[in-house]
Length: 368
Figure (cartoon, rainbow, N blue to C red):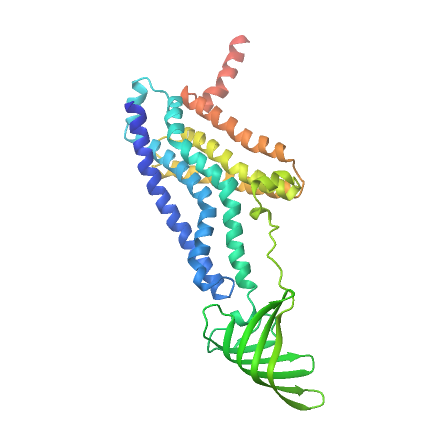
């Protein structure tokens, strides 16, 4: 049908352009933040692009929803401004008839948004956190760059090492300066090898010398050794995942504690918001030469920001047990749905707020 194909073609062009613009903005912000984390040692510099990819993947729900909302508003507003809507209205197509081609165009996007929110969002957060935790929990030898002095994680050791193996487990020309209580030690060795024993990382040094200095008594001891073991990490533990944003949706449902229900309401709210925003976009879009074309785009952005902020507020309220899970979902998303349907009905039948208010008053005056 010409009506459906024309509308979907315009929406596709507008949606694609909007996705590219918003994705570029988000990727730039994420890249700046990731580079900042890498500069302070929170992210492995060699994994910047991977961490950025996981972060952008987590933001895709917002990007797609906002792109769909803006593309519908901008496309329909342009059609109003170019008098295309007048032609469609004259041919018998009311405003409500636009809902069918809009949903036929948007249903794959709505499905992708739902899958991203329920499945991809926790997975991407978990992967990004795993990368960050593994880099943060790297042992002291792995923290050291070849040919540079660097302080250890606990601040009690200073390392210098030449690494000549790709696995970062063997190093040559090892130098360690450490302080334990009143004893300062300087250890040097020709070679060091990292091993894992009983949840402890051990640095096995060979062919070296250790100088011990007691700062209280001033005694100095020099020890030559052929083999010496230094504990790098006293307790190596597996990375635990307990943040709700990294827990799968199925596990959230199985363990319905308040913080899990808050996260579940946020994920479900993204999919429900995408549907409600589609109806709101159809109701908001219009053209008024007195206010310019950017007015309704600004109004659409304001509606989107308020709606998404309410979803975030609801997540916090549910997590703190201030409101119930189902009560919040029905109140927020049900109210927005009713508002969108009422607004769309008023626009479809060309009813104004003044007409809706003055008509009951006029009937009352005629009766009296």
